[in-house]
Image (cartoon, rainbow, N blue to C red; front, side):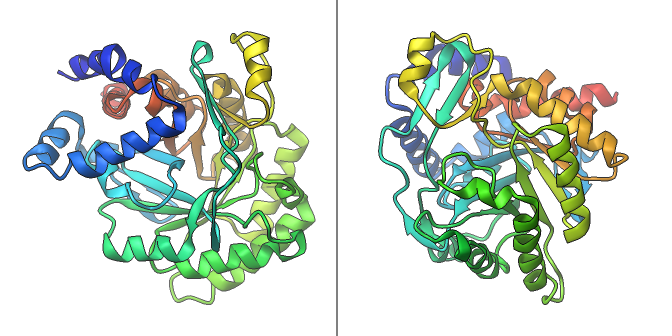
Length: 352
């Protein structure tokens, strides 16, 4: 039966959605998730076909108990509106955001593009979201039924010297409503954001967040999302930052600014322009980054794999390289919801 739904998605549903622009297709998916799951009988039906429940899938990572290793990467649920709906498709966690203190429209459209030959996306969304207070309101009104992470960033118009304040405001506002935090300083679509990846500036930012974090009785896990374009020397600096600031883990990786080895015609790639590349082309970079960080940390650093997970084998590769959890975004779009079940089933098969 799962193969039937997989084939139906690739044969009928995906071609239908791909008739629309990527951003409009995403809005349609969001609409169908919110409205379709309200129809009596649909939720148990979806759960029956997609949910895999087995204690062998459970993972305890940075003090949290995940029902399975497969989650949704930041960028899919940009408004904290879909996390409970996604739980019905078998995800063990959802990362919401990126959220900024104030709502902002993001970059001008078009800003999301498909590269079908590469099974990839390019986005320059620019942290479009309704602001942290809207997130808090949504989370209060709809108590999460799964683990939720908060991916936090800065407003585009915030001066660089005031960036730390933006991150701290988001952290404080979301503290009581999410299970873990991700500090996003590696998105290539926010002007000047890369300056926060400077080691000294990054340490200052993370120490400010951790000061707030440890003022609470039960601090939250804080992770750093890193670029796939870092050199080994820069990854060594990341590990030093992790140790200095007491971070709980790393998400490897964000989208890439590079366009190496693409199958799409150069003319199409140039027409798309700037933005973060995600999907199959990131598979090797992400895995190499995970393997390097895992080896250098002696396997003690929790790593969430994100980037290039387009099939069950890709997920198993990330886990074998040293990741504790995996996250989907572009793979979810190209392969459909059955990908979650296929990954979890493959993990169980590998364990038997």
